[in-house]
Length: 163
Ligand code: GDP
Ligand code: MG
Image (tube, rainbow, N blue to C red; front, side, top):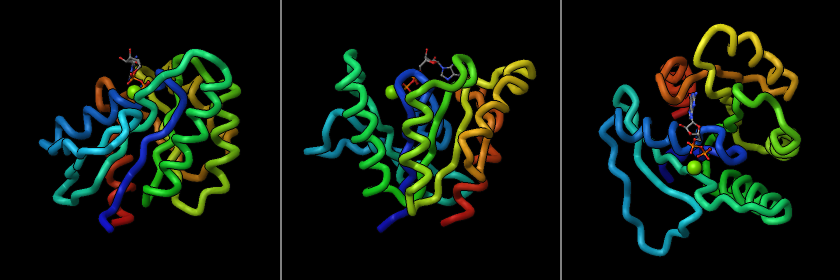
C-alpha cells in the first residue's frame, strides 16, 4: 500500500488549509473516490518527486460536546487504521485546549509515527507562545503557518524521509 499521511486535529486548527496547500502547490490530483464518506477527503501530494496520499479528516464539524468527542475518536481511528504517518495539528493562535490533550493521549499510544504540527505560527511572538505545545510530549514538533507556508518544507522533508 502507498504511503499515506493523515491530518488530524480538533476543528479550526487549519487541517484543510494545510491539506489544500499540499495538493495545490504540488499540482496533485484530488481523487473523486466513490463511496468515500464526506467526513474525509483524499488527495495525492508530491514533494521533491516523492508521492504520497493525504487524508484530511474532520470535514463534518459537529456542534454538541458528545458528537464532538465521537468525531475526534473517529478521526484518530481513521488515522491509525489507514495512515502510515499522522500529522497532529494544533493551533498556536488559540493555544492548547482540553481536546488537544485528549487527542494527544490517544495518539501517543499510536504505533504509527506522529508529527505534532503547531499551525498558525505567523510571527515570532506566536513562535514563543507555541512552545507550550512541547508539553504534549511528542518528539517531532514542527511550527508552521499553513497560510504562508512557512515551516512546511522542513515538515515535508521529514515526513517524506519515511518513504
Ligand atoms: P480545519 O477545521 O482544521 O480544517 O481548519 P481550516 O483549514 O478550515 O481553518 C480554520 C481557520 O483557520 C480558517 O479561517 C483559516 O483561514 C485559518 N488558518 C488556517 N491556517 C492558518 C495559519 O497558518 N494562520 C492563520 N492566522 N490562520 C490560519
Ligand atoms: Mg477542515
